[in-house]
Image (cartoon, rainbow, N blue to C red):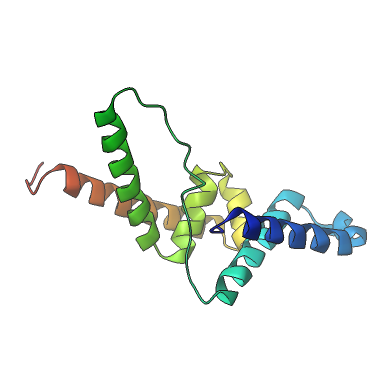
Length: 148
Protein backbone atom coordinates (compact mmCIF):
# COMPACT_ATOMS: atom_id res chain seq x y z
CA UNK A 1 0.00 0.00 0.00
CA UNK A 2 2.94 2.30 0.51
CA UNK A 3 4.51 4.15 -2.39
CA UNK A 4 8.11 3.43 -1.49
CA UNK A 5 10.25 1.00 0.45
CA UNK A 6 11.25 3.50 3.15
CA UNK A 7 7.62 4.19 4.07
CA UNK A 8 6.92 0.46 4.10
CA UNK A 9 9.84 -0.09 6.47
CA UNK A 10 8.57 2.71 8.73
CA UNK A 11 5.13 1.11 8.88
CA UNK A 12 6.66 -2.29 9.55
CA UNK A 13 8.67 -0.87 12.42
CA UNK A 14 5.58 0.79 13.90
CA UNK A 15 3.66 -2.49 13.67
CA UNK A 16 6.47 -4.37 15.41
CA UNK A 17 6.56 -1.73 18.15
CA UNK A 18 2.79 -2.05 18.58
CA UNK A 19 3.08 -5.85 18.80
CA UNK A 20 5.88 -5.51 21.36
CA UNK A 21 3.85 -3.08 23.47
CA UNK A 22 0.88 -5.50 23.45
CA UNK A 23 2.97 -8.66 23.94
CA UNK A 24 1.45 -9.42 27.35
CA UNK A 25 -2.08 -9.30 25.92
CA UNK A 26 -1.42 -11.37 22.79
CA UNK A 27 -2.77 -14.54 24.38
CA UNK A 28 -6.23 -12.93 24.18
CA UNK A 29 -5.99 -12.49 20.40
CA UNK A 30 -7.71 -15.37 18.61
CA UNK A 31 -6.09 -14.83 15.20
CA UNK A 32 -2.73 -13.12 15.55
CA UNK A 33 -2.14 -12.96 11.79
CA UNK A 34 -5.44 -11.19 11.11
CA UNK A 35 -4.83 -8.82 14.01
CA UNK A 36 -1.35 -7.98 12.67
CA UNK A 37 -2.78 -7.40 9.19
CA UNK A 38 -5.38 -5.05 10.64
CA UNK A 39 -2.70 -3.10 12.52
CA UNK A 40 -0.54 -2.93 9.40
CA UNK A 41 -3.47 -1.75 7.27
CA UNK A 42 -4.34 0.96 9.77
CA UNK A 43 -0.73 2.14 10.06
CA UNK A 44 -0.47 2.29 6.24
CA UNK A 45 -3.67 4.32 6.05
CA UNK A 46 -2.37 6.64 8.78
CA UNK A 47 0.81 7.26 6.76
CA UNK A 48 -1.17 7.83 3.57
CA UNK A 49 -3.51 10.27 5.29
CA UNK A 50 -0.55 12.07 6.82
CA UNK A 51 0.79 12.64 3.32
CA UNK A 52 -2.65 14.05 2.40
CA UNK A 53 -3.18 11.53 -0.33
CA UNK A 54 -5.48 8.60 -0.89
CA UNK A 55 -3.08 6.65 -3.05
CA UNK A 56 -2.42 2.97 -3.35
CA UNK A 57 0.40 1.52 -5.43
CA UNK A 58 0.10 -1.79 -7.21
CA UNK A 59 3.62 -1.61 -8.66
CA UNK A 60 5.21 -3.75 -5.96
CA UNK A 61 2.26 -6.11 -5.67
CA UNK A 62 2.28 -7.43 -9.23
CA UNK A 63 5.10 -9.79 -10.10
CA UNK A 64 6.92 -8.94 -13.31
CA UNK A 65 6.38 -11.76 -15.81
CA UNK A 66 9.04 -12.85 -18.25
CA UNK A 67 8.74 -11.89 -21.92
CA UNK A 68 10.35 -13.12 -25.11
CA UNK A 69 9.74 -10.47 -27.79
CA UNK A 70 9.70 -6.65 -27.71
CA UNK A 71 6.06 -6.75 -28.83
CA UNK A 72 5.16 -8.96 -25.86
CA UNK A 73 6.98 -6.61 -23.52
CA UNK A 74 5.10 -3.61 -24.88
CA UNK A 75 1.76 -5.41 -24.97
CA UNK A 76 2.00 -6.85 -21.44
CA UNK A 77 3.29 -3.58 -19.97
CA UNK A 78 0.43 -1.70 -21.60
CA UNK A 79 -2.15 -4.18 -20.34
CA UNK A 80 -0.63 -4.25 -16.84
CA UNK A 81 -0.63 -0.46 -16.60
CA UNK A 82 -4.20 -0.35 -17.83
CA UNK A 83 -5.31 -2.89 -15.19
CA UNK A 84 -3.41 -0.98 -12.49
CA UNK A 85 -5.30 2.15 -13.52
CA UNK A 86 -8.56 0.22 -13.19
CA UNK A 87 -7.57 -0.94 -9.71
CA UNK A 88 -6.85 2.65 -8.73
CA UNK A 89 -10.46 3.51 -9.60
CA UNK A 90 -11.83 0.98 -7.13
CA UNK A 91 -13.25 2.32 -3.86
CA UNK A 92 -10.81 1.87 -0.96
CA UNK A 93 -12.57 -1.10 0.69
CA UNK A 94 -12.85 -2.97 -2.64
CA UNK A 95 -9.19 -2.22 -3.34
CA UNK A 96 -8.11 -3.53 0.06
CA UNK A 97 -10.21 -6.69 -0.18
CA UNK A 98 -9.03 -7.34 -3.75
CA UNK A 99 -5.40 -6.86 -2.74
CA UNK A 100 -5.61 -9.06 0.35
CA UNK A 101 -7.38 -11.84 -1.56
CA UNK A 102 -5.41 -11.88 -4.81
CA UNK A 103 -1.97 -10.62 -3.84
CA UNK A 104 -1.68 -11.66 -0.19
CA UNK A 105 -3.80 -14.79 -0.78
CA UNK A 106 -5.75 -14.37 2.46
CA UNK A 107 -8.93 -16.31 3.14
CA UNK A 108 -12.29 -14.58 3.43
CA UNK A 109 -12.15 -15.12 7.17
CA UNK A 110 -8.69 -13.56 7.48
CA UNK A 111 -9.76 -10.58 5.38
CA UNK A 112 -12.92 -10.09 7.42
CA UNK A 113 -10.92 -9.99 10.65
CA UNK A 114 -8.18 -7.79 9.21
CA UNK A 115 -10.62 -5.21 7.84
CA UNK A 116 -13.24 -5.60 10.58
CA UNK A 117 -15.94 -6.73 8.13
CA UNK A 118 -18.20 -9.73 8.10
CA UNK A 119 -17.42 -12.42 5.53
CA UNK A 120 -20.50 -11.57 3.47
CA UNK A 121 -19.29 -7.98 3.03
CA UNK A 122 -15.84 -9.26 2.04
CA UNK A 123 -17.42 -11.41 -0.66
CA UNK A 124 -19.58 -8.51 -1.86
CA UNK A 125 -16.61 -6.12 -2.07
CA UNK A 126 -14.55 -8.73 -3.88
CA UNK A 127 -17.38 -9.51 -6.31
CA UNK A 128 -17.87 -5.83 -7.09
CA UNK A 129 -14.15 -5.29 -7.67
CA UNK A 130 -13.90 -8.32 -9.93
CA UNK A 131 -17.04 -7.33 -11.83
CA UNK A 132 -15.76 -3.80 -12.40
CA UNK A 133 -12.42 -5.02 -13.72
CA UNK A 134 -13.99 -7.80 -15.81
CA UNK A 135 -16.52 -5.48 -17.44
CA UNK A 136 -13.87 -2.88 -18.21
CA UNK A 137 -11.64 -5.54 -19.76
CA UNK A 138 -14.49 -6.97 -21.82
CA UNK A 139 -15.36 -3.51 -23.06
CA UNK A 140 -11.75 -2.76 -23.96
CA UNK A 141 -11.23 -6.02 -25.80
CA UNK A 142 -14.58 -5.93 -27.60
CA UNK A 143 -13.37 -2.85 -29.49
CA UNK A 144 -16.78 -1.27 -29.19
CA UNK A 145 -18.61 -4.35 -30.50
CA UNK A 146 -21.52 -5.73 -28.54
CA UNK A 147 -21.27 -9.45 -27.92
CA UNK A 148 -23.59 -12.12 -26.57
